[in-house]
Length: 578
Ligand SMILES: Cc1cc2nc3c(=O)[nH]c(=O)nc-3n(C[C@H](O)[C@H](O)[C@H](O)COP(=O)(O)OP(=O)(O)OC[C@H]3O[C@@H](n4cnc5c(N)ncnc54)[C@H](O)[C@@H]3O)c2cc1C
Image (cartoon, rainbow, N blue to C red; front, side):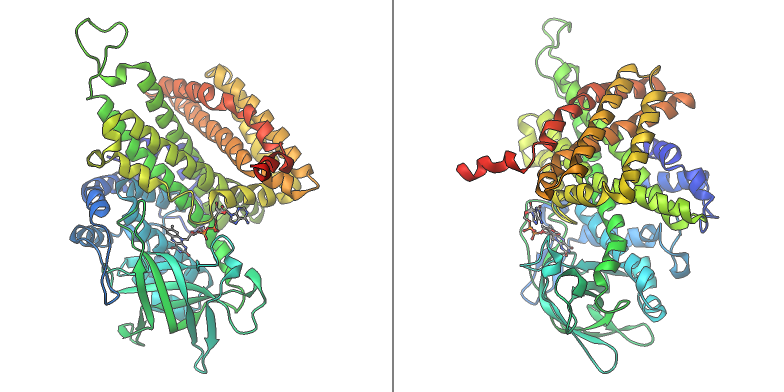
């Protein structure tokens, strides 16, 4: 069962639902309604979606010689119920049938969906990205044609960027777009790794494809974005002719077997240009923060499920005798300090991730909906800074936590029947797609650190210091270790921005992402403990204890990362002499 109590508390205290409810466009939102949504979503995900997780892994998607891809019947039933209940529309535009909740609420619902079945969750996640792109940059006609059916979930969406020679370097893509006299375009090219590129759960699939128009300048400046439906749509909105889009094959993967990963061939397929020609990458960037946050949420969602399963196992499995336990009796493994340590590592990092990611989502809401332009701008900057942390640090933690889950199970953790290996396998993709974590680290160091002459990071550092100062009495160790970690952030960040040779900064990017991610996680975990104490919550003391644990377990290690950040490119020369 999703931890709805915890989710509501983080929404209230970190995302600040009351504040979000006061923003333009959220007049219908209030704390009570949001709590009801979260409770209902939690029940739905646990009852309807979670039972499909195993069948997705065992049977998954099947590609047939005629190019169709079929999904297990359990997925069809769950999808139908998901769509009928309106879960696809939580944060979407009310003009087209959406419920218009803040992104923070959509993020919480997405977390619960992901915990229930990560592979399944990718279908609505990519649909949401397609909706966002069309809503933000499409013409009225495009919005009228596609949005209502995407928002209702009758149709689904994809994001089609990757080609064999264009992965991290999207600018290298070669798919071609040629204009037709009637204003449409013909799209030709092969795309790989397209998530939910083909399936049989929805009437139509709307591909958002990046391609090059004639005379496009090289690199990312020459990329345009097109809507390419699997079936063309008639003027009356009904489904028309089949477009020239075929699914060549699907991949056999380490995890997320219930998500078809398709090789797609577009052979003169009819496409509709979004916005202006050559500006596709700009449009993609407006969705990037949202999409990257949601991949971060995958790290969180899978970690939560792995934790719950491990906790239940540790409360059932007896082995060895814990010191102090009655003679002749074997103890539950949860009584062994080492197992408790692993469980607490899982729990505290999950809480830290949730705080970080919901804060990130709320910053996106403020950036979009606040009436004051300066507040909007500073929230957009905060979201831009937090996004690589949510995606990069969050998905690395997801893998680590899923791995701890395997470890807690002992031998059965390596056996598929327990389900623990599936979490581990599923979690492993999140650090790779939507910009590898290496690319996230580079984004953090090369783009986010210098933003506004360093003011964006400085403001966040000041916020974290306020948390440390406020914690001195309730959590003295956490206050001290957070202050030390903040000192490490400052010295590492200063060193990085002072580099003359960018390769020196690039060499330290990944350890800096870990350094800042762990520190930011501590800040949010402590803010939650402070909020629990201020409001007299029952679990206030336990939250403070957990923050102290996190501080000694993880924050204390943060200053030790500085030498790795500041080692410079010369430290990598040893590789050439192997
Ligand atoms: C299951 C799955 C689902 C996917 N879904 C989609 C989808 O729906 N739509 C879509 O368009 N794509 C999708 N992808 C593609 C995914 O986004 C890419 O695989 C990813 O961006 C990495 O690209 P690549 O595989 O070419 O690796 P490469 O770019 O070749 O990277 C290899 C390694 O080199 C590093 N590297 C590359 N360039 C640099 C650099 N400039 N500086 C430092 N390090 C660098 C990377 O970090 C990585 O460690 C999916 C992939 C998978 C496996």
